[in-house]
Length: 236
Image (cartoon, rainbow, N blue to C red; front, side, top):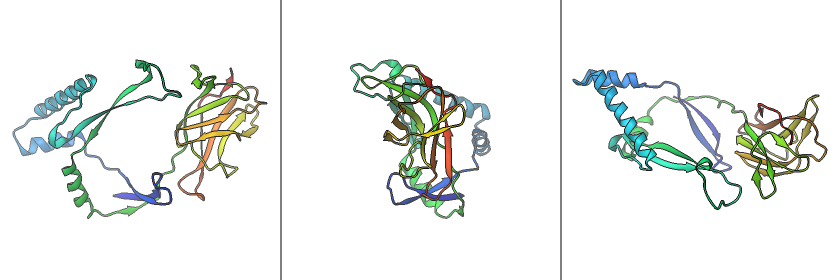
């Protein structure tokens, strides 16, 4: 079992242990296990699980959660991001999500058994900033329907993951890279968060830019990591 110690973002100033999983038991492994201990056939196991999966999906689409006893239960959620409180929530604005919750008895049993496993300390894998898209913020706080456009002096919002950075370090932050390679570090930033960065485009911005985010991984003296948007931003 491979583990690493990483900064705990939920409790700043503390650290957490992270398990790096490798080996995985597959559905085929379970089928062989079921076949070897009973008269159940491969077809029986596959048919039961296919029916269970289809049933869970059908219940979720109907807005119902499912409890399968010792195997755990489903949990439904809904995600959607709004810049203001909407008068009406349209279907296209939200997505139904489903996750699986394991029973407490199983968690306790695994917790006790896992305490005796041999642990190997490893360095955590660095994770690059993940830039997904940039949208200009229109008057009233509404995002532009078309991503990748900007207006000099107006707000632009980056969406993604691991976007937050230390603004006191000049080599971290949001950088605009022009076609000729000239870099401009964005200085007017109003939101600096893991999933979004809101900043003001420089008033003298012209032409297209590649947007980069640079931040350090886990600790102040860690490696400087960089992520970038796939497509450049262009004037609206």
